[in-house]
Length: 334
Image (cartoon, rainbow, N blue to C red; front, side, top):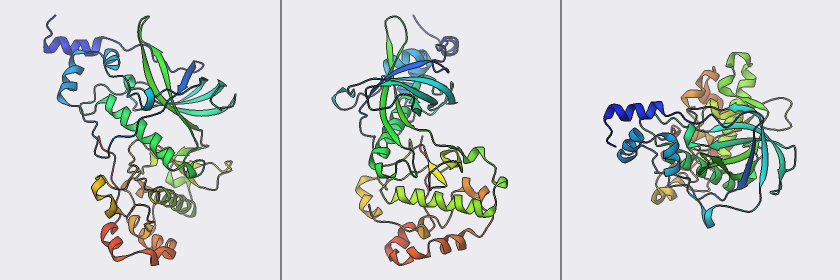
């Protein structure tokens, strides 16, 4: 059959995706998965010309079968099985980069206790935005999943404090037809009591409370950076303000490491110039706040940061001043 441009357009928009599979009450059987290492920092998820052409002629379901997830070491699968029940949709539906579901453990041979309430984050390319012009959904979910797993593994000592507790990577088989199934990768994390900053209004917080939140953000990001994690996406949507009922000492918990690097530099050959494993004072990296956090700040930021972190001043070298002066915050790439 020969397609015209108009045929391809109709093909893309008239072949429906299957009904959204992640609904409250549905049970999911997942298996432990060993993720592959994350791609290099320079890895791009831009849609290349061949994938762009493919998108014009092949519907998203068929594309998922053409581009299954990367297997990982030893085929990626580990032993055991866990049964989950979806109890709430946190952020779910077509067009999301990842699906966030509150789940309850029914049974598990992987050390998860029955009735545990967890957050499942599913990297499902089928419900990624297939009409977004510049992003390849399969590369994007591969990059996000592997980077997130690598970050949690590298900073295991921070789990349960400034980042959520991580319960591992898993895979889920979903039927496409009577003949075919497709694999979807996911991770399981603790449910952190609190709301993300983008769902909160700064005007509802006293200045002292906002300052405590900002200090906790700086301390959390610095703890990650001092372990060679470059978050690169410090944004209100990725910062949970912990509720007073929580037993955590931290005011905030940082989430979503799909854009993070497990090193400081974009280029491995330049990593030594970023002084890996050497603590870098917030007096350098946080002297200018990220633009997205500025609505929470109505005080002299520079003076405040200098006062809060004066005790780190003696650790700053001339090289650090040249390398980090003015702060460095890089946004996520496509």
